[in-house]
Image (spheres, rainbow, N blue to C red):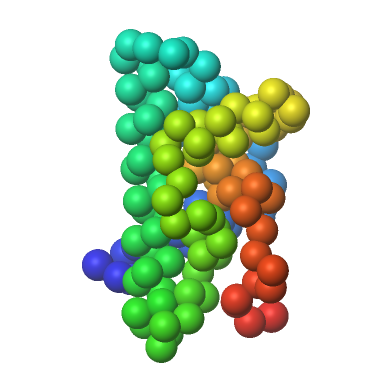
Length: 133
């Protein structure tokens, strides 16, 4: 299970490193996520919250698995190590929507890939805990 989570994370990050310009078929684009998160009620809002919860859970699970396999050090590319411990889903939504308003030209990307970038920018670490390559 740990390896599968890490491989999933590597695939998403690799896509972002390769400069994927558009969301892959079958994945949620950041534009679609923005449309869901822009609604204040109804199924779209619930889709937004569900997506953000799932992404946040995945980021934490992959980072935790990495730490478990590496003597307590998260060597994964996921941004959770510097996010506030008790950030709410509405706060995550607000961070995403703020970024979307500032950089609308980047919303064609896969939502999960862009979320990693957004969270790293919004919650930077004082020092990146991963070793330099």
